[in-house]
Image 1 (cartoon, helix red, strand yellow):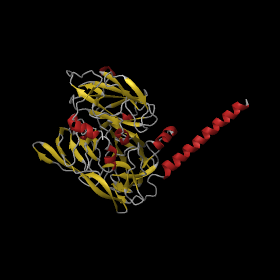
Image 2: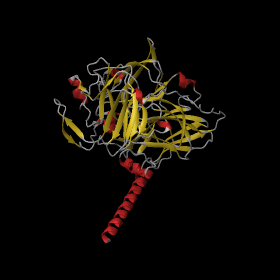
Image 3: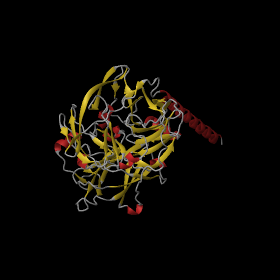
Image 4: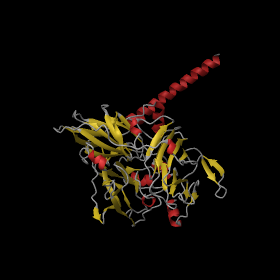
Length: 528
């Protein structure tokens, strides 16, 4: 009896100590250390729109990947990377049906790529590690804009160097409009009432220079940049304002909301407009995800754009070390009174044609994290399992191999992917080529603001998320697309796989994967 009482007291004490520790983590890790001590007085930079040249029915854009220097804090210049400038890059704005071409020049001292995140383009034009741009070289991708109105972005996808190159500044917006979006009575004057916000966490040294600790796993910075602006403030008119929010951080998760708890409306997900506006007071975005929100500032009150901790205590503690999502200020929003009155948001924004499960051609299971398997190349049998180095995290037991096609999809097929996170931390899962719909999370239908088109979705620890998509238009047996965790350090360390979309007549149709015959120079370089 006495032993039982002692054990119970010990258990209660252990639980109490754990809760106290969790509270300390929450206080010091979330409430004090990120963006502390700022007065938010620097004018928010709005990325300029890049104007194309019209040539033979195409919109032609020139982009240069450049080294530069940028002063973020107190005029101190630090080494950076950018597109057509020192840090970040210009916004590309096009319409569905446009034919575009790019002259992309690599002025860096290392190989890079440019990936069109979220875009439905041929695999040869996707900007993956299979389309490297040599130092001093040029890449000229071209394609028709097939996506509907949406907020996309472009960034490097250099195998093993994505995190580093993105961290130092290679990222920018790619905005698409269509006839439907242009017809809607919603804010759409770029830079005035339609404002892009790329949110990135960084570390600065005491001297004010950018510091990246290297690719040792998920990375969390303690300073938040918005559009590359440190300590940012923006002034908007006292009416409806649309923010296109991109989580451009390497690893950090945010729960965006406002300091006064005001309600706003989400109108779009990664890949397009929702069917109707959804009223929220917070929206959670993991790396790579986007949300378009409309906020009413007609009360003329100054507010802060914030990030809040996860209301689930266990999730908050998990995220404290791998993912973030703490409570801190991000952007000061001041309001200029105006006589202009915004019309109410439309009650209908879009029509989304959804597939029924009866139409599905294949259900494909994918496991994030878990043991790494070693497979005999001749027999295909698993010969060993191990847990990796701690930062190496597999998908379906495999680390990324440029020469291995992990999944083969038949052109035109509708598939359900059952994505299970077998690890202890959340992973944002990104699929190239398609926009998908989230069917459910652990059997529960997604909330209304997650029922639009997505190309990246957060899969929490122990969770299974089912997504559905159709693979149309583009097929190649020799050039794959990617699927991967969008924590960039995880992606660089092998948490990535490849899939091909092949014609029904292909010898690979219906197979479980195969090896590519790669150029040895390409394979050798990208495995560096």
